[in-house]
Image 1: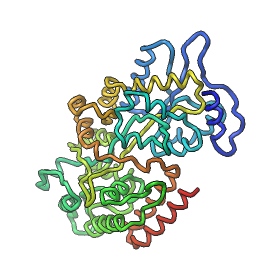
Image 2: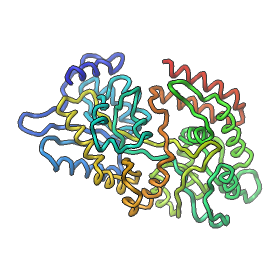
Image 3: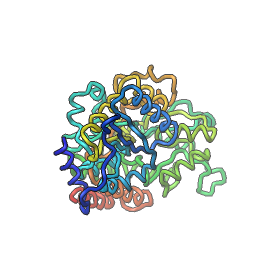
Image 4: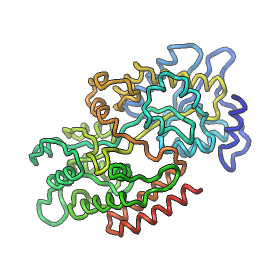
Length: 414
């Protein structure tokens, strides 16, 4: 294992010099200490700290010490910290950002753990795909939830809408009924739906439901007839039907919904808190089915063991991962954090005391990982954002798809 660690550290990236300093390894007269960076700051952070505390109390060999940092800070500082020998031994971060670090050797290969662990064997295939690069698993998930629709029940009732739509056509029809332009000036005071054209996971979800994709088997497939039809369908709904403002990003969409100016919004468990803080009586539903399937890009977070970990720390971290995914702890984490259970053998009934978790659990099967196994995620997402923003603004979708294909191919080739 020490030989593997040396090889991993050597791959941490261009410009990394010989490592200095030493990690918080095992002491001769005490437990092995492990530093754990994560960005959970709300109720999820509180329950994670409690789970870590309970794990530490459950045995005498390992002590995990958590350090809370913003997700952006983790992304910015992880490689420099590891190169300086000052990084964590466990780190949690958004799953779509992890392949670039795994590709550079920043994470310990966990393939053997997946093969041997009963707890990890309960994870569904999409969840495992989220943390797989090539044939190797590089992390253990802490969250996986499909992009979901949060809707304002009061606005639905005012419009006389009793059932949530099940197909795209029904969805657009309902969104048009919920769009209100009181003074007829062409700018609605209330929108039926938020359709961010950048800074959101919505468009990858729409491409999937429309029968298309972005990357498949390591190659760009964004320039397809299916994606063209999806682009034309939804840009027409936004521009002609005015169901959503144009030029919208994820943050502006949050603000529109929280102000009661959008009847439907898309996101994850955090929208429950936003709804409650703004007095919105809300429901949760799956993204309606497109012409191909009912699917949504999943928002995911995972934790990996970094190349800085010594043998004892790797063993301790793996023991914590199995503890975290044990049935009772996994259920506790879901109920308190708002994320649906990661284990496929935990039924909805086990989390029914939290209506948000129960609702998200019922639609969890629609989730698909975003760009699984793709290293150049940032560049690929930027290309998609550029495509969708310009398409919604009225530029030629067919030409834009060709440009996006070339940009994504270049990113994948780097």
